[in-house]
Length: 303
Image 1 (cartoon, rainbow, N blue to C red):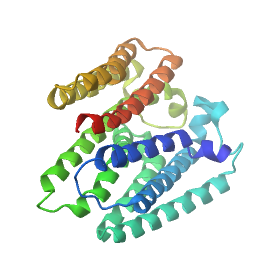
Image 2: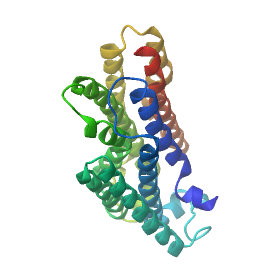
Image 3: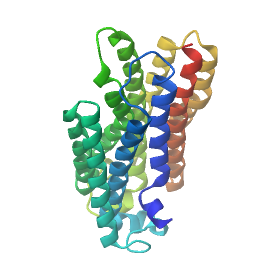
Image 4: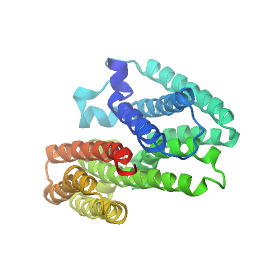
């Protein structure tokens, strides 16, 4: 169980759900030609999970000093799992993920796609070891990598089969995935800003230079408040542009995505205590989950 907590199995489960829904709720019920059969898709999910789990481990290794202050009861490395074992797991999972990515890239006839997994693996290490403690760069990078977990399905399932006869349909579905990836990027970016405010004490003592440390908690709150309005506008634009005739879909997005986003924006404006930011962080996780879950609507909407 300690290993599962170390690799953050709940976050990995979210990746599985997101990728499965893109593949089987968005792509499979409809005409676009796809490259991945069930076995190949499982390999894609496996490669993604291995590299993401390795990223979570290296992040915890570099966060020991700050976690002792910010969340002392949740420190795993050095308590339940030795640092040596954590490093071994980090290297093993990266190697497995990259090997799976290499096989998959050759399988779909796009050997150059292998570099995506290598770049993501390196980016996660750079984030944990350096960029996490910088102003906004770490927030932007990790949010981009969260978005990539959705885009990987489109890259490996649609791009290798892109042909003139079905290009228009395939690009339509790829654009839908891109829209969801942008949503994931924006929601995660707000959550990262909130987590930086929440963890300011431990980050300061560890010598980091996150946004709240540089400009203060109050100004960071205002920036998080401003940024939190962007996903609201993006979702409203998406609903009005693509789903304006689908009453059920509009209702879903209003209740499970837009309303919670508005609630969080209001709460950010008045947040002061650490518990306020913990609550907001959890809310944005739920918003991400319900946003991804909306992919289940497409088999009903596009019949």
